[in-house]
Length: 53
Image (cartoon, rainbow, N blue to C red):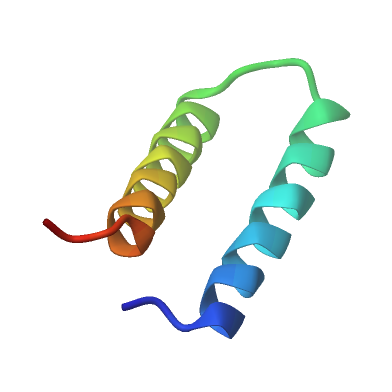
């Protein structure tokens, strides 16, 4: 189970990342890797918060 404050911190980090990358239009390999990492975090949070069968 993901603690609420941990999830909130991840959301704030993601928002900061989006604001920072919005100002920079070029896509580098590092940016793509970082975006993929955030996708993994997003999916992990969804799985952690989804109701178990």
